[in-house]
Length: 561
Image 1 (cartoon, one colour):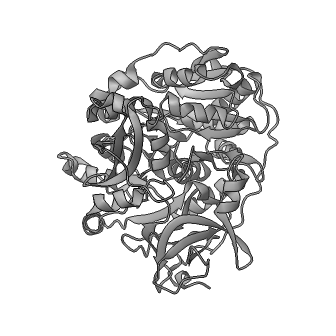
Image 2: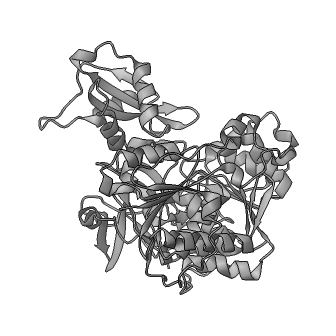
């Protein structure tokens, strides 16, 4: 028994027995159980469980026609929409591996997601397709995509929809426009409607719990993002556990606004809902008044989010007209929920905001607050089947209660290792008390009740509204700018986002007339908007150690004072 077991939900076991099946089986099982039940709702149009499963099977057959074989990696780069869910499960049904990619990435960043996992087929939306094609076309012929399947948002909804289901007016140019398909040099581009019309049957499902299912990428302190190898069973664990932990059932209605390319949205929202047989009400991006309308109209019961979304919704001038009474579970992570906001949710709506903690490497939650006993501004307790400790990062000895150390995690949700990176994999794990623990790189402490609190970062990272920004990756991209001689990325305080990205830049002697705005504009052209610096400070030199390394910590400390 660990200290936190005193607060464990009495209705739940400490660990669970996993289904000996693949993630695909969760969808096809509920298509048999609830064929006519809405699996997905998108701007007023519903997709039933049967239609979702049948569409995914047809799409899987098309993938096989395009040459996808067991274990092949397929890129999926979309904002939230029904096509993302169908394509995700189609890739699994084709016995292949989903490579989820942030749709905010630009061509320069997208190259890595094509070459590193050796991808030949990608799914994307028409607004993003030119960037994907641009990335592929810039690569050597042997490394390019062979096939690009492109969907229009209007393949999934009626752009003339009105009332509570209508998208915000300023979204219609983005959502309602049908874009031409881009040219893919050395390959072919296909319309979604043609791909999903395939009449072949997919091959037999041969993958199971021990096969690779997902390859989400995570950045770190050095170099390019690394692929996290998740088997069907690690994702299955957190889907089943998430269902049990949050009182999941087929009668739940889940607001899917956390991005489903991200591990939290993918596992804690999408996979958990599909395993439960619940209904996903899908938002492609955040809009507070659309969220308010959808929660009211569809009587949403479960909402996983990042705290800034809740703060924004509560601040809407239309807030009084929204009905939140159907919500029974609200929680999230990525950033701390301000105590005053959590208190308002409790006092006005009887809702206890349940914060959680996890990483791409742990398939979202490794820790979560018990819904009946949450602590505010707390990571929670180790999740089902999970052991977590706080150790000295140097000696790897367990720290006394209340003292800071590195959080290490052991459990079935922990990934198998980094794709093609045995060195990074070896560095990420330690043996502790005879078990293999993952080193989170986060510093925290555990209180006398067994609840964990984040105190600092061992890793160099910026948290902008829940999005992790890794300075080394941003710096590597910025060095491609012809005017930049050196750059160091640090965090700057932001009253709304928590933290924002700041670049400290040394200009080349030949480009001294370059402006801050020119650097910012270039960054937004060449990297995801949340990574792009919002502030650029020009200096004549960066502080360096005796070995010549940039002393980023000195700049960070100066920024904090």
